[in-house]
Amino acid sequence: MKKLPIGIQTFEEIVTGNYLYIDKTEFVYHLIDEGKYYFLSRPRRFGKSLLLSTIKAVFQGKKELFDGLWIANNYHWEETYPVIHISFSNIGYREIGLEKAINILLNDIADKHEITYTKEGISSKFRELIEQLSQINKVVILIDEYDKPLIDYLEKATINQAKENQQVLKSLYSVLKDSDEYLKFLFMTGVSKFGRVGIFSDLNNLRDISMEMDYSAICGYTQTDIETKFEDYFPKAMQRNNMDRPTLLEKMKEWYNGYSWDVVQRMYNPFSILRFFMSGEFQNYWFTTGTPTFLIKLLKERKIYDINDLIVGVSGFESYDIEKLETIPLLFQTGYVTIKKKMRQVYELGYPNKEVKASMMEYLVGAFRYEEPAKSAAVVYYLEEAFIANDMEKVMEHINQLFATIPYQIFEAEKESFYHALTHLLFTYLGVYIQSEVTTSKGRCDAIVQTDTHIYLLEFKLDKSADTALEQILIKKYTDAFKNTNKQIVAVGINFDSKIKEVGEWKKQIVEKLNTN
Image 1 (cartoon, helix red, strand yellow):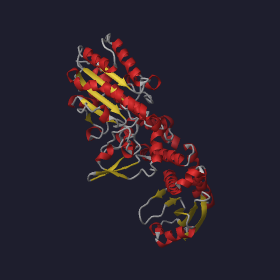
Image 2 (cartoon, helix red, strand yellow):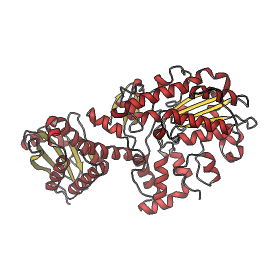
Image 3 (cartoon, one colour):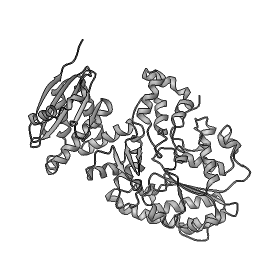
Image 4 (cartoon, one colour):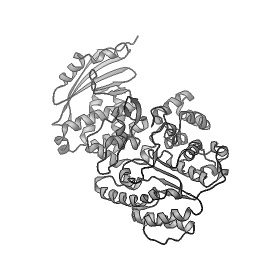
């Protein structure tokens, strides 16, 4: 059984080290055959680096590595090309500065090829490197995580560093616009598109394949991949979870599938799948590899907490100005929402899967209540236990715990927005683990929680009364949709008292009793 390549992003190491490789070489062949200049945006940990490493091995003519793969008998291996491979994730710019880090990298590449520079400055060296290598053959340039020196500095306190790095990158990439005669192939990857206007203002011939249907599965795993390539790893996961294969597949789909860039194809995050098959446990793997602190802060500052069922036009996928970050493009490009469906000229976006939703809820609840994210998970766990035990006193106790940590002066200044944000987030988060629904559409109450035996319909009021909340449920007949479910239906009116920052009063009424026959 092949080893699982967790964290390994080098194609040659995967092949020679007896690691599992999901064949993406047909995509590589078509890229080379169809064009010359490409750009691909995908979230982190989605296989971009491995893709570039695979392309590099093809252009270097390492045919022996591709034995048994699609491209082995479909590519002309006779001609090889010099490759300049730049990965901004491992050049150490945070410690020594971006320009110095690039300068060291260019010197290292020159030393490897026995090239001596005659000029100083990164743009001059880059140009000279391309021209000298082209004497061997036309040059292949692969740039991985082109935007990382920007993403790392997007918070307000460090935005000036992002702008400084943007100018450094623009100087480097400006060399490419006049290098067409020396180039065989250029491929750039990144998480986002912000900065592209500033960095690529002169490089407008890049073909952006990020949302092209033909390349929607170029990174990540398809459902077919899961069911056919991971066959050896299912027995352990089935045993660990005490599930048969169909049940396990459905749960895997719920937790890790759902990413889409073309509305049609749904992809699994490869990092999460590899970690899942390694441990056999359903956990949040992808989110914890790089907490998006700047994004969480941005959502909190803008009081954005409901990021499901977003409707956007085509422009909603573009974001260019690092000083005026657009929320929806950032969420989409970084992988926290994905395309759910297309309706005429607009798209509906939402969480791709349970893993992302649960993690985002944990961090947002933590941010809005000024607590560590992990402590929010505990509150939701105890709230779930209280509902399952049909203990409404405990439910109110845990709701109060949610608000207890918010500094009073902050809550008092914007109590309504904090109140609505936290109640929404709390029950959306609960809904990841127990059937719960939060909606603002007419004809539904604020929250619906279902257990094996009960359906709770909850209506919240701020500085009014529990009677007012309860009457709304009964007068508007929110309970009608749940009759004949063979569960006890309970209406719960809750009034939150902003002066004491707690549930001031609550009342419940059994609308339909549990049929025990």
